[in-house]
Image (cartoon, rainbow, N blue to C red; front, side, top):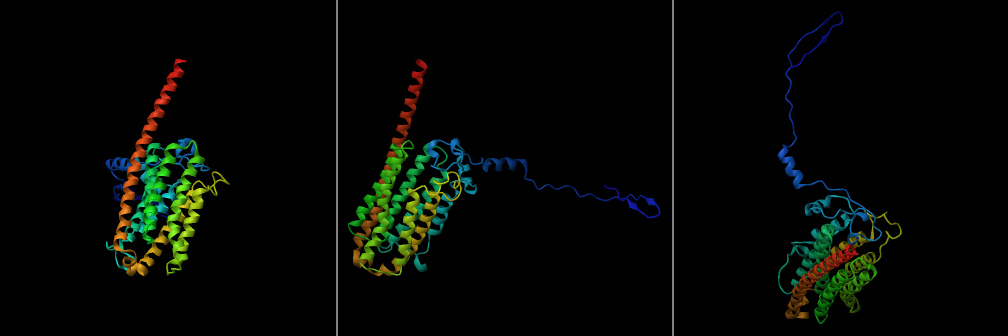
Length: 359
């Protein structure tokens, strides 16, 4: 209840009027709901500096923007909406993977699993696999050193499969395809070897071992186009192929050289460092390459089986499955070897500590 006061010019009088007061309504969620939401969606800690994370999780010339290790996995999933030095790396390949996954084939014709279109289907699968594995690796690698190694191996699997998918879809169906499968696996195995044996203690040798097979894998993308140009086999998709080669070469340059952050350490931590530029360029190159292959598919489909034969086409697709199997077996072996090496380091550390105590 409330009181209303009225004033007059000549006199003052008070009139008591009963005014109903509306009850207070709260729109806040009940306490039980708040506790459930706080458990399901925990508050994310702010990014930290490089000195606050293990050396394995650091990048050269990147001084800040790291996510703290050891958080629950859902925190790293929620970090999709947080600003840190891996945000653009994750979103660039995640969006490219979503855009690259087409349920409809070129000009809405749809995909079929006949021998002529199967290489293109496997290429789209390899592209989505490579982009999604890369996004997952950069999303979860900050959790721990063990998970970092596992997702780096997973990322390497996606890259190797995509390299062979490019060679397969570019229709070089001869002796080149088995060699492409072997080269893709060697590229993946070399990356795993560099990760296990050189680790972070020898970054130059590790980078060199990674760049050599990556350069060879880049030939899988450029080689078929070079062969087509030298044979004067022009098509409406040639300009798109030239564009994707330029994008992949630029991506390889930024992957190899820490430019521009080497000139101003700490300035490009969140936006603009070399690995982000490499990711964006490779994502754009993949989308351009897919569009070019769709044009190639429409132009060359009637003559594929007649030119290469159905058996060779199916053999190339079988090599795709064999490559995936070999990569997964290598990952399992590398994971076990990494676990054994970590146990040996822990045992060696305990022995050194015990010797110090004895002294």
